[in-house]
Amino acid sequence: MTQMGLYSKFPAEEAMLTDFKRYLINTLQVPNCQQEVDNVSRMLRYIQPSGDEVSLDFLLKSTETKDYLTQLRRADMVPATILNYINNMIRFVQYLKTHLNLAAADPDFYRKCQAYLDLLAFIRKPVAKSHSKVTCKTRYERFQEGEKSLQECQAVLRKAKKDMLSVYGRLLEGDHVASEEKTMFRYFCEAILILGHFQRPGAVEGVTTAEWEARKNSGGKAVHKTKK
Image (cartoon, rainbow, N blue to C red; front, side, top):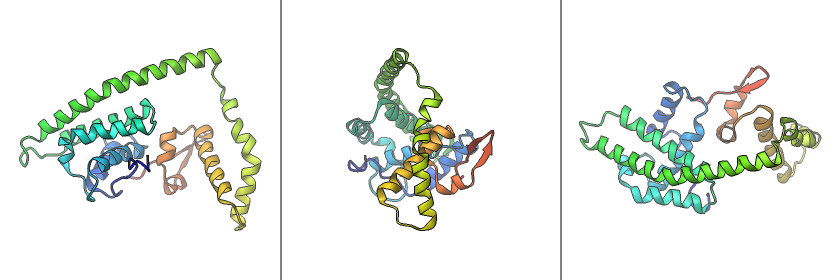
């Protein structure tokens, strides 16, 4: 995605995206929403490759919107991921339509929003169908092969623990640690969050160091909130 120019985003402090994030957290009660905001930001950045502020002109750029989703498929993104991008953008435009009072400045604003939502809904149908087929296939394979237990899934943590504690100790002591070892240690930490604390992969991708350091313990599980 990086090589194809699909991973670039608007600055984190961009006003419209910041307001959208605040809306997700405060109004919709979605604390771990950074991944959703990032998906919208990436899609908008592709549609609007220049400037530091989101322009509502993206509502008229149907060709660029369809091209971004086509590029996601070419980047081997699974239907579930592409569906997330579409759903996230739908919620963003719905937010704009209901919370931005621009009717006086642009009488066609609501029409543009609805037309863009109709476009996304049209694009969404074949993607949702593909996702449904993949899901059914996965469920069938799991039924045939049997679901792995939590104990089996956490085996990787038990196997790697000794080596990773050694790396962690050398990091604390300031000793030399090879870049490959640092990468593996980062993967181990991510595995702990997903397999040990039952965080969703998307939430782990979006969480910041500050958010993790401010985590709280709830029933033996780590709970963190995305910054407002």
